Image (cartoon, rainbow, N blue to C red; front, side):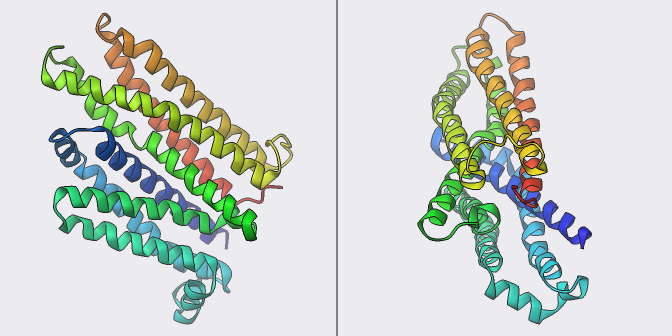
Length: 297
């Protein structure tokens, strides 16, 4: 069943990544971008949002049959109604799947709402999708209060990660406005938005690191220092990549942003480094999907 396991890992990657970006970009718009620019950027992100919703749809639809095939007797069980029902209604995996399905329905229905309500519905749906991740995998490995604390910390972690990396596409849309006349309304709005994002970003990145450290302690009881295990090697690599992302973000904030007015090339470099952060975040998500399929020790 290695094929089913690999496809399940792909579904997790698609679901996690799409939900993280949808949550982050919607949160950024609602929390940091004033009207009417918020609605204008929401429309400019329409194609991106459609792609993310499609990926979520494919992942949710594919997850339950793949889980049934893995837990059952192979591919025939992937389409056997009795097995699908047993997995959906009798396991924690099924509970998580129902949460994902409910969030997907809300997400698809959001397209029928007016813009502001659609934004809020998308935010809620993506938050539920991310929270549902804590119902399976390593976050569900403990029982009682220990398990509840682990799951709550895991939810806070993925929300914080999404608030960071998911906001980056919105930042890319805002940056070109800085090329306008420095006294224009558009340039002033862009400066205000980036300043707000920078201020909030300090706390969000700190929360990512803190909750990530707590998660690691819950799973391993300490730091990933035993590299004889694939899980701990990959987790250490993930930490390195996140560290690189933090360094890039710090350079952007304290190196490039202050130089925007006196160095014309700073804006282009800032955009390229923002793209680099997005690419690094995709690598981190791929590692997380892989880690979710491995035993910690």
